[in-house]
Amino acid sequence: QVQLVESGGGLVQAGDSLRLSCAASGRTLSAHLMGWFRQAPGQEREFVAAITWSGGNTYQADSVKGRFTISRDTAKNTVYLQMNSLKPEDTAVYYCAAVRVYRVGYEQVPQEYDYWGQGTQVTVSS
View 1 (tube, rainbow, N blue to C red):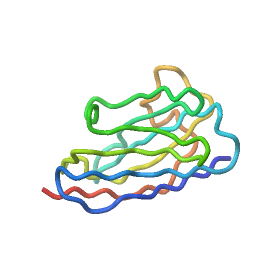
View 2 (cartoon, rainbow, N blue to C red):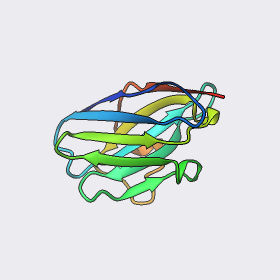
View 3 (cartoon, one colour):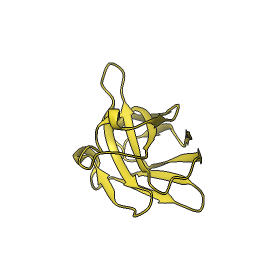
View 4 (tube, helix red, strand yellow):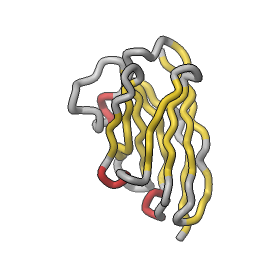
């Protein structure tokens, strides 16, 4: 089992920055893929970014490339999502997710992930 707890959400203005954190606990994460997803009201859960715990390989959605950066601190068992130049369309609940065994090429698929946090709200006003 892996437990994930997100933090760092809030209300900001367009153009501002936020850093989300996902603290992980439980079984070792060395073989895991860690992901960030988001879900706006009435919409499906959307991939944002992912990172392999061991090698630090990263994946990002086209909509956030150049603005969002995913990283991890293996000593702190924490994954981060640095969000810059926020836009109103980034408003959503952001979820952290993890999976140990996944199919390469499916990093953006929510159904690939086994563990989810409770989510943190990010609201960007115009």
